[in-house]
View 1 (cartoon, rainbow, N blue to C red):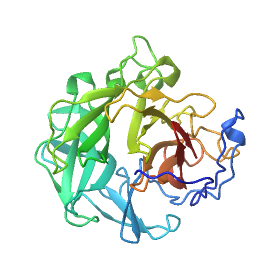
View 2 (view 1 turned 180 degrees about the vertical axis):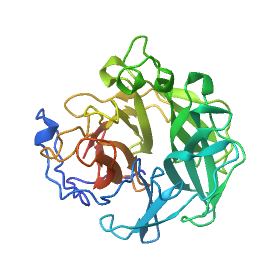
View 3 (view 1 turned 60 degrees about the vertical axis):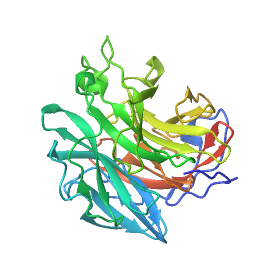
View 4 (view 1 turned 60 degrees about the horizontal axis):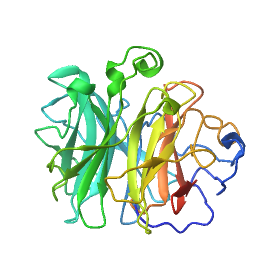
Length: 330
């Protein structure tokens, strides 16, 4: 996730110019379209050898549907990376996976699923495998539930340069909101913080308590979610996130940065360099883009955007990013 050298960007399936101006993002870039045209929400990618692997939210094709590609453009879908979920969970709503490779070569898949003990909310959990394709064996206990705060969703793994393992995730505060946009548009609005949890070297055992590294503000609308954390070669930590509401046209991809370590503090980027992607980006081709995930090379990314103007089918797009100091371009 950690090298940054692109001076211009060739997006696989999405060609965007590297540009920082005050122009509306709708006028920036031209794309050739999504790389997975079927429903594949909340995508995550990892490269092993010469093959890319993508994992997504359950869509009727198993708990964690997956696909493979050699070029990030042409994808072959098939298989369920997580045939069995943890005993703490109930199937049917298995969301937003992420896969990381540990130092010993094995793999951990993080996911969110319905909390069997409190079925109105989710927890995040982990599963392990010696093969990136799985099948992954779920851990018996969840990593985090945050039940009283609305639940925990959107986990993403991160390995720092010192070898320490972390997972970032969203506390799903809008799940217990008071109505309106994404159930959190009516005062008093509920926090939706992004949390950082250190893990043992096995990638599944929490070390200490989680810490909050970001939260929504009025400018973000009802929530922030879908975190993905990277570190640049220069030592800047970049936390990508989405704000707005996934079901509406205000959903987007933005980022915050820290120059003081993985624990922050993080400062949200602002206009004109953020948000990175909004409805209308790419001369109107993107609608409700969100859920950006960064590969371990620190350059290649995937995200979803709606087919048409509803969230019924969220297609996967792929691309590349570059960072200079605390500024990210796409």
